[in-house]
Length: 336
Image (cartoon, rainbow, N blue to C red; front, top):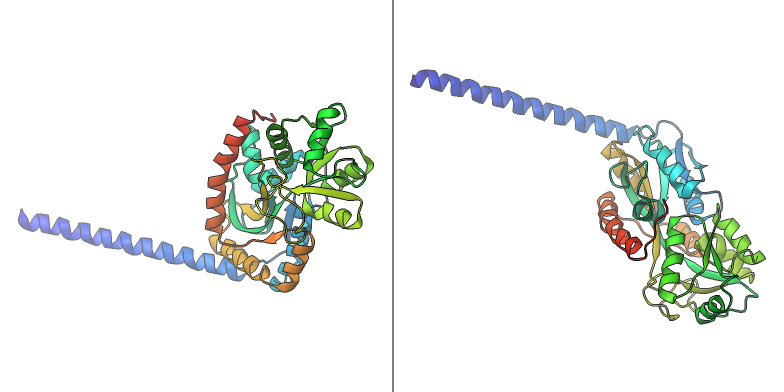
């Protein structure tokens, strides 16, 4: 009996050893496949999808990214604008794309953390549908009015809205700008009515022509018009003042506590893309963000280089999505 048991134990150990070796072989094969995928990437042109029309901060970032990655990796990186539905169309398209690293999305905070807070049904999951490569940039929004508007500061703007409720409105292109504006309404005790736009460029035109009273706008499309004198910036939504506009106060400094919104843009790709490709792109982005010409260009449009790891990007989303859900609930904001 003892001999029989020993024989069975030996066979069990042999089987376990065989399984362990088999598992190691599978892991080794997988690692080799990952390494090959990264070494051969990209092997065809890469789409960098943007959910907005040309001219906004995300589009400008995508084109800067496309230029640098094309130069470094030797294949064309081509920007493809797929505007509509607050960038949901573009995001859903990328979520359904082949997970091989050849379809990327420059995704802003509105797409990844605001949409889940304000829409009960989305055809993508910000965490589960994507591999999160790296955060490219962070930026506040600029609270702006036309240059000849009677409001010279945020206090004046609030007084104008209270005195002219039928004329007080704001423009936005997506949920993040709308939620920021509604947060301002809530904290300032005013009611600017919402007017939707398709792009940041259209919003700037709306401000200049008087179609809208004010807007929290991307720095990219509005900054040239601030410098040319056609648009007046009243405040920045960020926690700190912008380096490129040091005299511009934050909304909090201007007298409205509780309105602190710093946007971001990150690069994502469909879930299931080989980890080695994700890490290769992560490394290239971090290297690109250290280049002086890139940093100078980003400063010109009022955005800050970010960087970091894919794991840090995911952790940030896992932290921020519940926070913005709480904000939307407190403000009773739903867009369904």
